[in-house]
Image (cartoon, rainbow, N blue to C red; front, side, top):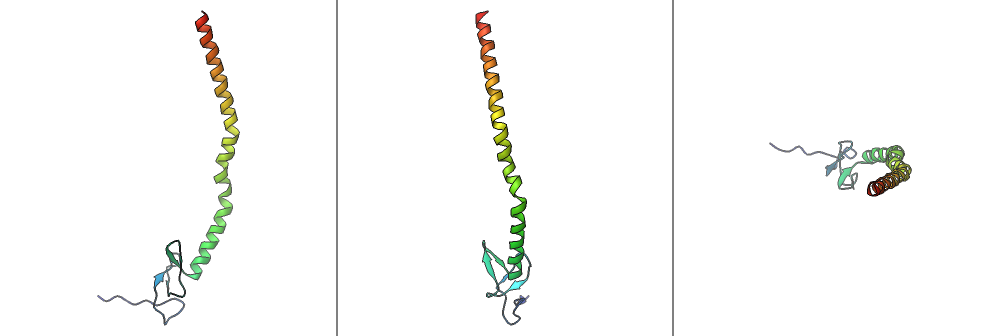
Amino acid sequence: MALKKTYCVNHSDRPAVGVCVITRQPVCEECTTRYEGVNYSRAGLAILKARRASETGTRFWPDRVWFIVLGVLSPAFLFFLYFALVTLARWLMRMEAA
């Protein structure tokens, strides 16, 4: 069985050297851009850029909320740990004295 030769979606006279991972369209050497080891077409790069731009706005709070929570709760945790150790030390001193 012979393989079918595919041509670029933008240039019908040029053979395709890759397939865009987003649009799944065959692209020639001039139309392809390799980014992070994979092929992208112009339309695929535009879609990727739009996705990354929309992700940066939504990821701001979920990534930083843990730092905020830990920054608020750490002093409270340390205070209660100190209070528990002091109480334990006082109880042990009473046990020795009795």
